[in-house]
Length: 168
Image (cartoon, rainbow, N blue to C red):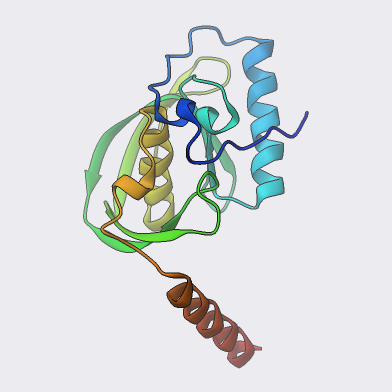
């Protein structure tokens, strides 16, 4: 396994549509393993192959219990609505407010090419949508109805720290 460089906004490949994964081989497994290591190092909740310079339809989503590998994912169902803060490893230090579905059901292949379905609520649903959009060359900033200012981010961090101190 190896750490891969996470591309940042302005890199042209982040705005390109990824190709379908056709070969479920050692090369794909190496990519997925490297993505796992890169995601863990970055302390993120999701990572798409285009973010590490590979234009293939593969993403990782941490659902809180495990890190799901979604190859050639497609959204089957979505319902409800959530409105919340969203960030991206490819747009470091910036956050915006984005409306997303509350519940999402996805069909994807595993690293061996077997099809399966999974679903998620809340943050997992948000991550499914966010990461799958990366595969179509879409960054969340284009979905955000408002980006937070540095001052607003600092206020948010301070209130989170105060909450943590109260809970301790």
